[in-house]
Length: 327
Image 1 (cartoon, one colour):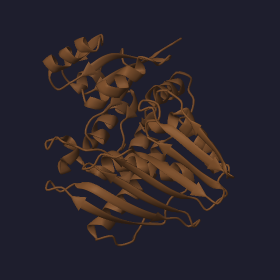
Image 2: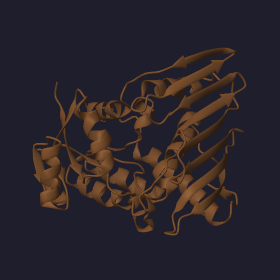
Image 3: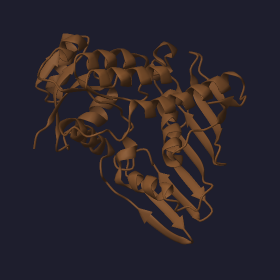
Image 4: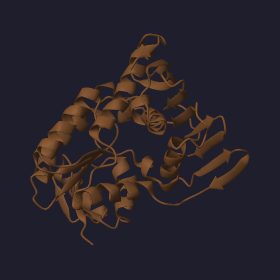
C-alpha cells in the first residue's frame, strides 16, 4: 500500500509521545523527516526515533521534494505562519489544534490550501475513535430524544512554570490548550453553533487563563457546561443527556490511548463499551487516505473557524466578568 510521506516541524512533546507511535501503526503513512531550529537537536531526535532525514531549519524540510505532508505541533501562535508556508511549498498539512488563533486566520489558511491544491486539517484526534464516531452518529440521529445538554471537562496539573502553555505571547492558556476539546465536542455532537456564551476564569500571573468555566446556549434550546484547567488533575470527558437517557465518555478525548470507557443508558438499558483503537492513528489514516485518493476531508478549515469563534467569545466574556457574549 502506498504511504503518505510526513515530515514533522519541531520536536514538541506531543510529536514523540503520540504522533510518532501512532503513525508507526498507520497502514498508509510514514515519517521520513523531522526539522528543528538546531541541526544538532534535529539529528539527535531523528536518531532517537529512527527517522531517516533531519533538517536544521523548518524551511529546509519544506523545500524537500521527498516530503508530501507535514505535521505541525508548534506553539499555537506559530500554527498559521508555518501552515501557510507549508501549503505554499505544496505540502499537505495536519496541524495541531487550535488550527489558528482567530476564525479569520482559519478561513484564510483554508483558502490558501485550496489555492495550492493541498489539504489542511486540524488535528482533533478524538473524533476518529470508533466509539466517538458511534456517539456522534447516535446523537445526531436522535437517540437521546432531543433537547440534549452537555457537560464536558478537560484538565490536567501543569507543574512546569516555564511551559509554553502559560505563555501569553504564544497564545497559551487552558481554553486554547485543553478547553478547545470541550468546545469542539459540543459543536460536533450538537451540529450547531451557540448563540451566546458566558465564561469565568482564573488567570495565571503570566496573563493566560489557567482555569475556565463556560456556559453556552443554543437557539434550539440546548445548553452546554464546559470546564477546563491547567491547575487540577481530574478525568477528562463528556456527558450528553436527553429525554431518553445519557451517554458518558470517561476519558472521552482519548478513549483508546488512555483506555477510556463509554457508558450509555437509553430507555433504561445500560451498556458499557471499550475499544483500544488508537485515535491518533485513525486520524492519520483518514488524512492520508484523503490525500492519496483525492477524497474530501471530514473536517475542514471552516469547521475549525467555528471552534475559534466560540473560543474568542468565551475569552471575551471572561475578560468582562462573565457577561453573556454573542458568538
